[in-house]
Length: 377
Image (cartoon, rainbow, N blue to C red; front, side):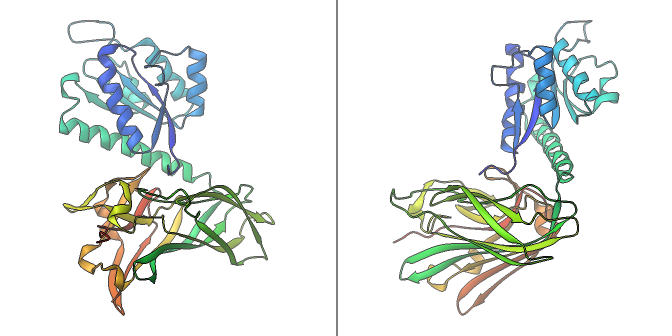
């Protein structure tokens, strides 16, 4: 699943010699959930009216300012189209990030228009530059996340998430996940609530496999609300649906509801179930399976619990807590956020229980656990 990908206009040169830096930036953006537009046709320069339309549709402008015309031995002009697109975004009040080739004369653009990172073409594949550009683009993503938060009509007072592997007999297991949320409305809410459930790994799924079972419960609220679910996708490993609240919540209303999902294919149960391995490295340990909760709304408190039955054969020291930025997978581990969370691992009657609690979790980050899946044999 793609968690709320952000659209950003990429302004850059169309020349062949500038293709490596353009592709590097686009690749990193794709990995952290930024969708760069104006790149589908090989970095063609767009007519000004089309560029303005794309910029208006975007959350920000990212400009790769490469050398174009030579002004002196050490000074170069930027591409005219890039200059115009930067100006359009600036006067449209769009956030800007400038990635500037050494020697390009900016004539006040850096001071007036936004944060800048300088590069030299021979250095773009060095570890030092890749670290700097990744940090720059990730900071842009976080800035845009904060701006998007402002459009919500509500915040989540708490999310209580439970994910467990249930034993139904010898070597017969099923995954069950549930989340209870309390939403507090700061203004009238006209939009349906989006709800998703998805497998974190690609698995071997039989053609006749049952789809995920879905349950929806209204717990309580500031008035007797009713909930109506609309399912747009329901497979053995993915659910996309929306929840309409009736009557429409008003300012100062709140609602508590629970969603539950059950399926054998939410995560692999055995190593043989994995179709496309995706290795997650945490503290130099490698794991082939992970699960977690991803906040997509401003949230005050997150509590998550993960449970495994005794007969599954895991032990406390083989499971690892983690927090990582998440788009279509875990992009990178955030050590400072792991330290901020309250973590506890325990055993009850031989069953393993892992508890995680954190105040104000970061949006679009997964708070979860990782382990290595046992083999059937």
